[in-house]
Structures are given as structure tokens and as C-alpha cells.
Amino acid sequence: MQIGELAKSAGVPIDTVRYYERHGILPAPHRRPSGYRSYDADDVARLRFIRRAKALGFTLGEIHDLLALTTRRGRDMARVKRAATEKLGAVEHKLSELTRVRDGLRTLVAACPGHGDLAQCPIVTALSGEES
Image 1 (tube, one colour):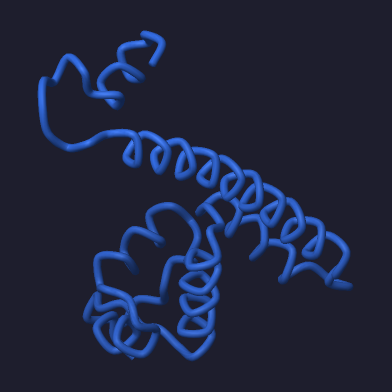
Image 2: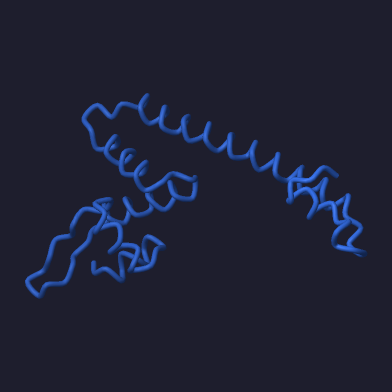
């Protein structure tokens, strides 16, 4: 199949296919005598894997490592689980930080009347580092 068919089958834009090729996440395709790229079902599966891993928050570097693990003999499941566990820990840390930020913003928004002199605004005061 050609690049357009591959992109459509995998649910990604053509530019994404080329980007992954340039960065070694998708192997260089076979070239037909005409010079056109030629892809197969393995390439579709790989792109779907990449897309799903990105949706779970894995970086391209992490995805590259995961793909390398899936192609090794013996396919050590423990390493894949360890990578997913590490990503889960990072996501949980981010959630904790976002929860802290959300709670702080809620407090500031609740304290601000939304009218009056800007010098009395608790949001501006808090962001300026002054005590409220």
C-alpha cells in the first residue's frame, strides 16, 4: 500500500508517517521501482501501536523503547510492565500537581468578588507575592 492508504488505515496524517520515518520510529519503507514508498500490514499495526501509546502519554522516545522491547526474542514482559508502571507514576505525579494547582485557583477565584478596585483583587495580590 502507498503512504496515503497507510495513513488512513492507521488513523494518522501522512506528515506523521514521514515524521516517524525520519525519527526511526517507523522503519524506512520499501521503495517500488517508481520510487513510491510501499507499506504493509505490519506498518499499519506499528502506527496504531504508536498512536495508542501516545494517547496514554508515552513520549516518542519511550515509544521507541517499547517498540524495541516488543521485537526482542523472548519478549520480556517485565520490562514492558516496568515502563508502563513508570509512566503511571509520572501521570499520578502530574495529577497530584494539577490537583494542587486547581485547588489553589479555586480558592483564589472564590475569594475574588470580580468587581471593584484591582488593587484589592486577591488573585493579583496572590500572584504578586503579597499576603492576602
